[in-house]
Image (cartoon, rainbow, N blue to C red):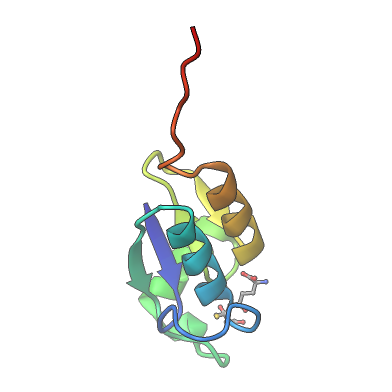
Length: 96
Ligand SMILES: N[C@@H](CCC(=O)N[C@@H](CS)C(=O)NCC(=O)O)C(=O)O
């Protein structure tokens, strides 16, 4: 899966949406490819990565998660919710 972010994933999760999405994914055991799109501060349209995000979501904002099957999940809260639901390391218990 590809996680499109601004300049990175650092900073406090309460204030940085890209950090929020990344930490939620990794905390749940996902290992996304992190793709930097740069931009921000009114310059998004000048960056090809941001234009690609606009084509996917209709807006320039990141984080945006693209799953291996092409599903697009926009908004850090939606990504965090998906991560919590889809933890890859959840053991499956068989009871017979
Ligand atoms: N509500 C969004 C906010 C996302 C957001 O503001 N992202 C910043 C980067 S950390 C951004 O893309 N800013 C560019 C802009 O506002 O045009 C979310 O939680 O995902």
